[in-house]
Each structure stands twice: as C-alpha cells, then as structure tokens.
Length: 279
Ligand code: C2E
Ligand code: MG
Ligand code: MG
Ligand code: MG
Image 1 (cartoon, protein in one colour):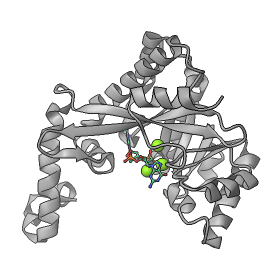
Image 2 (cartoon, helix red, strand yellow):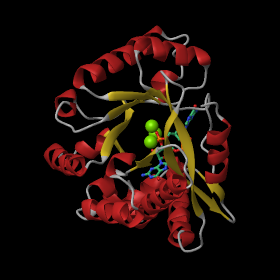
Image 3 (tube, helix red, strand yellow):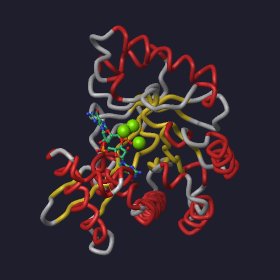
Image 4 (cartoon, helix red, strand yellow):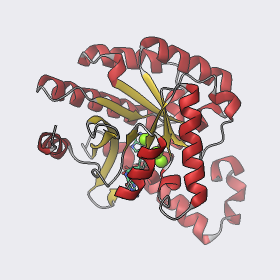
C-alpha cells in the first residue's frame, strides 16, 4: 500500500501499481459525489429455503453507476471507500435504504422477509454502530430479527475480543449476524465457537465446482455438519445449477442464494419475482 510505504517509495511503483493507485484516486474523488448525486442504488437477491422453496429473505447489494465511469463493481469500490473512510456514510445510506425498502414491502403485505445487509469491518469497528442500528430500526419500525448483518471473518482478526463484544451487543438487541464468505478469511475456529453467529454463508468458491470437485464436496459437507453442531444455520452462496442444489439439499444445507434462483434485482423486479413465484 502506498499509504503505508510513505511518499518516498512512490518512485518504486511499477506502472501497474501506478495505474491502480490512479484508479483508486479517481474512484475516491468520484465517490465523494456519489451519494449526493444519487448514483448509488441497491439490488436485492432472494435467499431461498432449500426445504420449502420459499423466499425467506433478500440480500441488499450495493450498485454504483457513474455517468462517465459507468457501473463500478462493489468488489472494486468498497475497498477504496474503506481506505478513505467513505464507507461510513455510504454504509449508513445502505442500511437506511434497505430498512426503508423492507418497511415498504411489509406495508404492502409481501410475506415476511428478512433483509441481509453487508457490513464492512470498518463499520463494524465504529463505536456508533449500535446506536445507528437502534435508531434506524426504530425509525423504520423494523423488528430486529428481520435484519441480518453480514460480517466477514476479517472483523475479528485485529482484535477478536472487541469483535466478540460487539457481536454480543448486536445479538442482545435481537439483530442476526451471519458470517459471509465463510472459509476464505483469516479467523480461527477457536474464535468461531465464541461468536454469536446465526448463519454461516458458505463461500461461492466452494460451491462453484461442487459438481466435479470431490474436495469441494468434502469441504461443503464438513462446513454444514460443523454449523449444525454449533447450532448455526447455513446458506450456500453462488448456487447456479440444479445439481449443486441437490447436493446441498442432501447435505442438509438450510438456504441457497444464487443465479439459479435469481440475480440481484432492483426493488420493482424483486417484487415481481416474489409475486410470480408459486407459493
Ligand atoms: P457478497 O456479500 O459475498 O455478495 C455476493 C456476491 O456474489 C454479489 O456480488 C452477487 O451479485 C454475487 N452472486 C450472487 N449469486 C451468484 C451466482 O450464482 N454466481 C456468481 N458468480 N455470483 C453470484 P456483488 O454484488 O458484485 O458484490 C460483491 C461484494 O461486494 C459482496 O460480496 C460484498 O462483499 C461487497 N458488497 C456489496 N454490497 C455491499 C454493501 O452494501 N456494503 C459492503 N460493505 N459491501 C458490499
Ligand atoms: Mg454478503
Ligand atoms: Mg459472500
Ligand atoms: Mg464476497
């Protein structure tokens, strides 16, 4: 990282690194205006119960459309926003918009859905997080158990004890926590057993090749069994085929999310999707 290396090391940058940091600077500047210019939006991807086929919830996924840069992937701009602190106002906007949408769907009589919102490690460590969650739940009249905050294992790397304390506080409020991208991070199982985690989300890298990779089948099966033993639910990410779904069902995975069911959709299309699905 240029920041960590200090100014003098700039001349050691390779052309690729310079291009990367120029892009990061460009994104930083553009992001500054993204909120006020209404360039951000949320898409929602259904989470489906494997046993019943019912949609039990949606995950809110951030989209950024810039007039010149076009659509920028969250995988690219979220890390930039984390480095600059811009993730805090953006993350608050995401939480507010997702809860407002959930409120609207509930008042329209759509079946009780949960709303999963991704939380950056930077947001998770912010002292005002609990107060913000409280305030927004109250403002939109959403019951705490209908909000699921998706964390990654990285929230616990620097200070596991602080992370456990924050999870305990969120859990005490009734908010549900899920561990996103499970199996790809740096946390240890000795921490996991102390986390107030409701759900493990099995990373899509293990799901992608389930049909022809025996090692992935072994890993997915072991994650599901471990979660069951720890009293946690499991959601498989990136489910794209009926074969993958069959294997996950046989293994006792609880929920699935992926293009097999639906891509992330804008609110009106998600609503249509829900209404058109057989009950
Ligand atoms: P994630 O939370 O693990 O989200 C799942 C990603 O997988 C999403 O990419 C989704 O569009 C994609 N996906 C879903 N089903 C399938 C499938 O069947 N096949 C494949 N190949 N991909 C699938 P997306 O929307 O580009 O988001 C990427 C990442 O950016 C997210 O990973 C999350 O880490 C982050 N992100 C997105 N929105 C937010 C946000 O509001 N706040 C924060 N902090 N991070 C966010
Ligand atoms: Mg997620
Ligand atoms: Mg994930
Ligand atoms: Mg991810």
